[in-house]
Length: 264
Ligand code: 5BU
Image 1 (cartoon, helix red, strand yellow):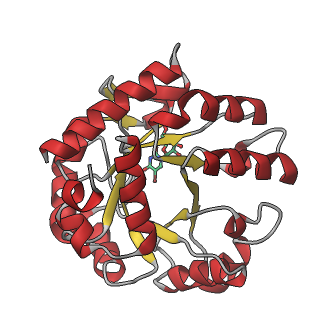
Image 2: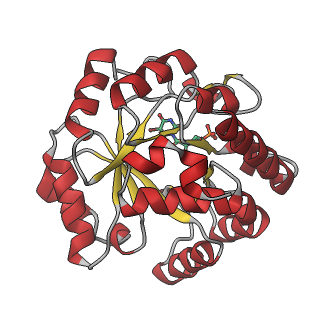
């Protein structure tokens, strides 16, 4: 199926190249799944892409939790992800002033050179988005920022007033790809979608077919409910990478997410 037909208003109102790319990848893969690839060895990470790459649309990384990271092994890993038609998303949660965030896109990990998306808090003000965009521009690349409007963890401090301000400042900025919403609470998500409107993306962690409490304050909601409530991408980590059969589970999340979008 064609992306404009499947995504409807989201396609019409969001003309950012990276958002269009995501919507197209999701249609090719028939999956709204972003895998949170939280494994600590390069071998484990590579194995994950081999096993589940065909069932996911995006790959979320935490580059700084890999024990045996090297620049070369990471470059090969990113090439593998690109070959599997995946959008690469570094969940770095930048939070500093604009200039430092720009410089943090470089450094040892050189996030600007391989990431298509990154996360950021807006706690330091809107210049962080320009800083991150300048980071990509420094290496002639383009990328998009996902602002944390909500979080999935219990007791987080992103209250409704804070969320509203993040959305207000972010929704008209071209450098903002979209917002992180709380996948574990469909009602909160529905409110978020109302304030965001139809244009920007909302991606949601805190999603698992086994709904309930996770480790250390993580909370999980149902993937189809999250998409019904306005999420455009379910971010799934342990539900896939800790499964006995990651490929089978990834296929299941893909199917559930795709049908939820078609129903929406
Ligand atoms: P899990 O294994 O499905 O719980 O992994 C969730 C991932 O999403 C993990 O990489 C977190 O860093 C990430 N995450 C989250 O869980 N909640 C949030 O609010 C944000 C990110 Br932002």
